[in-house]
Image (cartoon, rainbow, N blue to C red; front, top):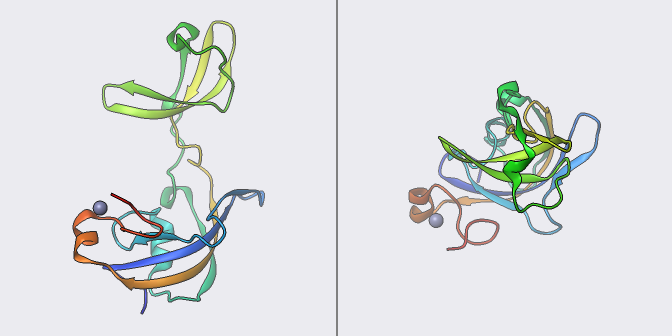
Length: 160
Ligand code: ZN
């Protein structure tokens, strides 16, 4: 069976940045499962999956606009240190939930001094070309329930 609309594919992956550093990888023996065509994975990777079958191995480079987006400088903000009441230690790289008019977003601390904290609301991988090394583990038909929910149930997917 080939990966197409209404199939569930599970795959092993290693994600590296352009410097060759590993950013993320599927745990040993635990492939990630996704529902094809439902936007569960970044668009560029989903496109590259189309038509693949179990056992296929390939590498693909996904550009930021097909990955986690381009960086938006408007999402970098300087906020008073006092906005972090109850947090004793603030260091670059820490992540916080921030609430604004549109709801909650995750921000990453970019810099900190005595009075102010610079936070970045961009996805940590925004602007980064993504180098995926993929091995397809399994392809199967999606169940009616998975199609209705828009995600995979069971191994490698949602449990609820
Ligand atoms: Zn569900």
